[in-house]
Amino acid sequence: MRVVLAGGGSAGHIEPALALADALRQADKSVSVTCLGTERGLETRLVPLRGYELELMPAVPLPRSLSAKYLTVPGRLAGAIHAVGKVLEKTNADVLVGFGGYVSAPAYLAARRHDVPIVVHEANPRPGIANRLGAMMTTHVYTGHPDTRLRNARYIGVPIRRQIAELDRLALGDTARAHFGLRTDMPVLLVTGGSQGARSLNRALAGAVDAIRAAGVQVLHVTGPKNTSDIAPSPGGAPYVSVAYVDRMDLAYAAADFALCRAGAMTCAELTAVGLPAAYVPLPIGNGEQRLNAMPIVQQGGGMIVDDAELTPQWITSSLLPVLTNIDRVVAMSEAAARLGRRDADRALARAVMDVAASRPARPGAVAPAAIAPAAWPEPPAPGEQSPPQAPSQQAPRQPGPHQQAPGYQSAPVPEGGFFQPTQERAASQRAAGVRPAPGSVPGSVPGSASSPGRHRHAR
Image (cartoon, rainbow, N blue to C red; front, side, top):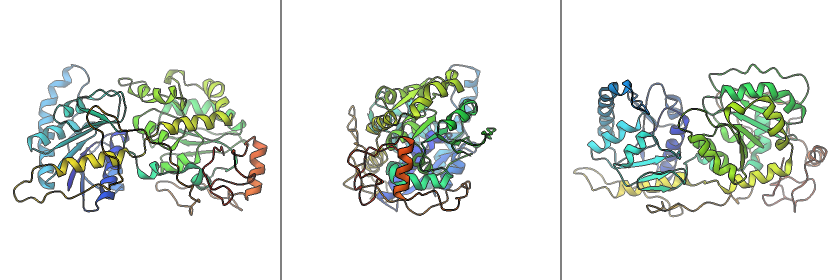
């Protein structure tokens, strides 16, 4: 089976496409996957990093409102359609899957011209122009938000990486903290603005970081590749660790107890999948979709929300910090977030793509696609239906594995003696910090140890 994926520009369009690609390869290693992108998108780095072929095409941004820019669209669109058509012919594509963004509109039009079946996935509650166009050309339309309105839409969730979907934060927590140079006996706030960073989050944190650290909360700050951290923490207090970019977000999520972040569809999907509560700061531009992404989580008790203009050092110290230091509230918010998580959207979408490719009439001289999804994978919902919510993972906690260096940066050196305290010593430090053992656990035990066989309600 030969699949072409159209989803470039931001990580919010690329990551769901790559999660689908991984799921297709997991089902059948012979599946051929080609990604479409532009020279200025993050796909030029992310797609090759994940081992997939990337074909570049001209970017054709579609204006959101009528303006003089529309006069330049037809010529650029024709060139992009021609470029995609050449890729479809070269790969002999069985199906094209679009995720929105600059590359999707010409990809849909080229696929229709070449009689290639189309599958659309829209991650946001308010679909963009490209996916509204694509939904008019196919009945195979899937969404990442239950309130998205698109023709023939079926809600399955946002495809996320298996590395995130199968993450056990409790089992990996100590290893992840050691990786970043954080202590194991103090809570961690993860601050990230997404793949590009967020200057407003960085500015607000700069004015509050000393108060956060003085309260005994560590900070893991992902500044973004285009931003540098000017934060110079005062001596003493809890650790503050700054990195420009994290390729292994599973380690960042495992290290954290709470997040301060934007509210992109991918971010919301990943945080709920791993049960990490957050204070969401919706991007103040666009069509308001980020607020819509976060509101269901906030309404169900899995997070907080604050407008970008209201995010100040004072808000962090007066509104966020009291939550971070309230163990019971953090645990309750974590459980509420996890109840909303969908861990198998990648497999549900992969199964749908395989079904579409398999049902395509055989072309003269072509070999019919033979990829078949594993029987245990979820069936895609029928039109007008939603896939059932998935319960939080009940898998037995995994023991922390050997320390692995995430690509792209160096972690802080491990001090003599390491970051791992003996079980009884760590339990004593937790009691001193006010962390109570989980109900049913043995005092001094940790999740995943011989005396703690299950996954407990536990705050580090």
